[in-house]
Length: 431
Ligand SMILES: NC(=O)C1=CN([C@@H]2O[C@H](COP(=O)(O)OP(=O)(O)OC[C@H]3O[C@@H](n4cnc5c(N)ncnc54)[C@H](O)[C@@H]3O)[C@@H](O)[C@H]2O)C=CC1
Ligand SMILES: N[C@@H](CC=O)C(=O)O
Ligand code: NA
Image 1 (cartoon, rainbow, N blue to C red):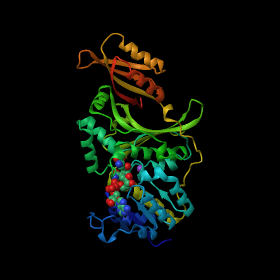
Image 2: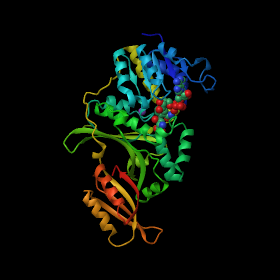
Image 3: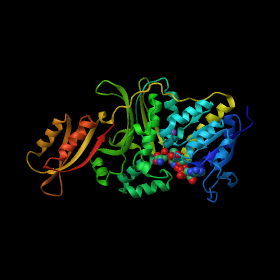
Image 4: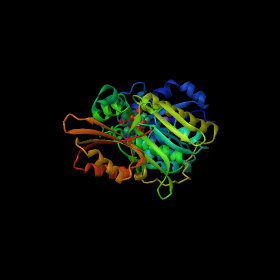
């Protein structure tokens, strides 16, 4: 049994500072849980002169390569692809177990990291990479390993949920709300990753890989962010009894030719105001999992922020450290099912389409004819007056239609002389 375990920390920003603080403050309890003391031996940073509250300056180093070579457990919270990937691989080569929060790296090159960890017989843990503090990686990877997951639906990006919530409840514009999310430590180093849906897409890829025992990379995820949403969209959503949420959806599906596969997508969607996901406010995250035997499960909590994310990391540190003390390893990559990723165009959803049309006889019939022509069935139509006397607003809700059929319909409707504008097209989920 080792007399102590050397822990190296790579990165000391929003998350790293909290990991260092908790490792120090909770040292006695953590050591007792692991069965050997955890010794924080160094913290790799880019700039030694930046003050870091609660972190002993003597631990700081700019030599990350040397640091990882002597550690038992390496915690990577610097983010980005390089040098994070090389440092993780070096750590593994030197026999260290790795805990990372780096969803971007896992979603781009997870299999390389898994293979290296497997070859070296060490652990690769990443609970913090999906939905921050919420235990979701472990439940999907371990607790549901005996079940068949059918669908995962969730709010997995705290920044965009915070932004949409502030837009809906306080009328803030997108830029203002993003600045607040940055100040609160929720946003990625480049918040474009959040608002354009890349961060949620990376998390969706990781969840889909675990849920469906299939390699899914970020390139397999159909992605749309929230930057084209307007205050008007948010207000309209409220007026129709919905809220707009950025959703990550991973599901088993069957293509038209009968191929069984999966679809993974991230996009804004209208969620009915009485749906549990509609009540997820601020930077909170929530993930629904539907499994054949378990039924519906919901996981809820803080998806971003320094201390919540550090909680998930420390949980992983205790797990991998215990393995080093007691022997054994955690789960390895499971990709045996190797399901095909089906084309996004085949995904079926309900839609709300908002139009501005000429207020004259026969307009509705022309619009309805285009929907019928493309095989898209109407669930409801609502007409309201617009400020211009000769203009009307139409809100069309469809039954579930394929993305391909809907796109064709919208293009045809937009080309009608009587249609002044297609104001917005939003999917409706969770109804
Ligand atoms: N902030 C959050 O709420 C969450 C963040 N994450 C992930 O955790 C990781 C860290 O995120 P944050 O702490 O928010 O980022 P951050 O930008 O606050 O901190 C990263 C730190 O790593 C340092 N760093 C970057 N490259 C370095 C290098 N080559 N050598 C030494 N230091 C280097 C940076 O100077 C910075 O201080 C990212 O992978 C992020 O996606 C995951 C869940 C939640
Ligand atoms: N930027 C991310 C942080 C956690 O993963 C978010 O906003 O959720
Ligand atoms: Na998590």
